[in-house]
Image (tube, rainbow over all chains, first blue to last red; front, side):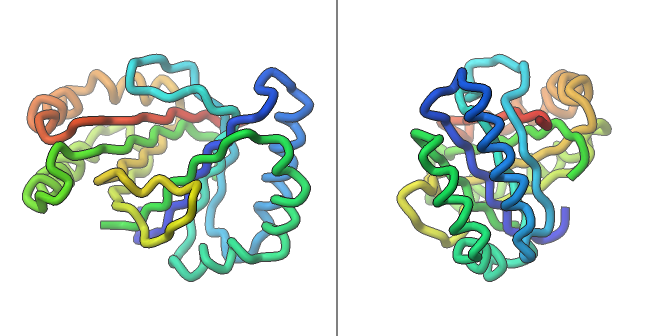
Length: 103
Length: 103
């Protein structure tokens, strides 16, 4: 992978077993992927792997790459992102974000 | 991004301020990237972003994509991977892994 700014978000739903909520969040992320500064995106769920070090307790994963840190800053305040937060934030109880830049 | 198996590992060094240890781990990951089933890899460090939801306490990020779950299984037992664990595991105090498949 080339130089990149990676923004990896994990969502824990308030109701993890509620498939409708999971679908609503996934649809919200799909709409969110329209933000112009996003280079690549991936919407995922925990794999079936199981070892002590693996955290598979989250509901959905949202992995973005940006070309620059500035592009990620721009994403944070993009109207599409603000709308996503307004529309979907009632669905989750916890979010953990890892922002990573190339060494 | 196409269908993918994402394997995202975060390392916390025993001595986070030890730049030699950080370099050793980064070099070990660079060697580890030779595993044939890896599709893409990214070695990173925390970005300068800071919000309540962001965890920037880790030392290094190791983000892999595989085409299939079977390719990731194969990576786990690859001799290059086993050698990496033997050579570098004394450097870290904690590892957290998130395995994610496409929705």
